[in-house]
Amino acid sequence: MTRCFDGIFLDFYGTLVGGDREAVEAICADIASTYGLTCPPEQLACAWGRHFFAQIEQANGDDFCTLFECEQRSLRQVMREWGIEVDPMPYVRKLQEYWRAPPLLPGVTEALAALPLPICLVSNADREDLDTALTGLGLQFDHVVTSEDARSYKPHPDIFRHALKQTGWLADRVLHVGDSLHSDVYGANRCGIRTAWVDRPGRISDVGTCESHYRIEVLNQLAYVIGGNG
Picture 1 (cartoon, rainbow, N blue to C red):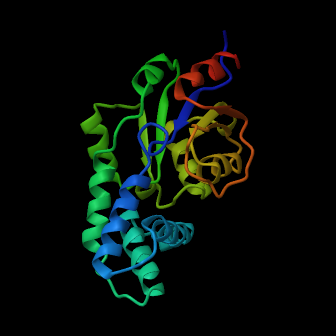
Picture 2: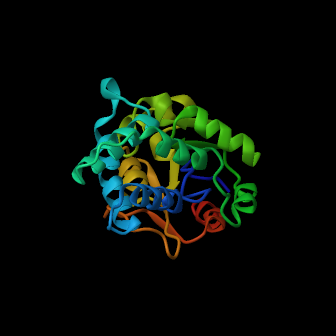
Picture 3: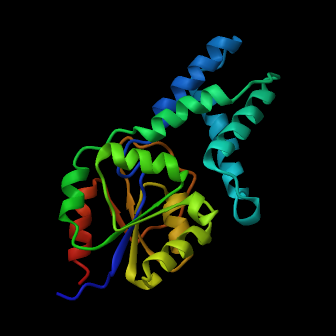
């Protein structure tokens, strides 16, 4: 069977490993306790998230900042909304600990082993953090592209262009797989790359509204998507 895909672009956080929602909310609970905030940790986490995503939307190209820097800036911004000046470093260090040792989601090892195509990991991550996580999990891929490498964040097209250049694959011969409608599906679609949205039950809400080409609930369904498009 001749496949219509030459390779797979694959998201990491939230797709292969757990997202950082619990870690962020735990940090926010600590902040709320320390500074006597009466808001629920989930409310603070959502506010921090809005500022964070606004940061990475702007942190591309000449304006690039690392993910660690974006988290610091966005936490400082959200705390100022409560009239509090905070040193974000110790809190973002805790978040970085999670990035470097995230839990592998169930069934991922088997799903990866069943894929017949080369894989390029495409992740909004700082290079050292992602390399540390991959080493700890014992995962290896044909190619790995981070936002720090490309100096851009999904959904900006430059990170996908960087991955295409590194792999040598054509956009219309690649399938990008990820759990975010905004970062993964919208970002890849705008570059002419087909997408598979990993829509796990109980996943966090997504600001995206873009339509994916394929929808799966667990990663082991990806082999059927590829096998059915030869």
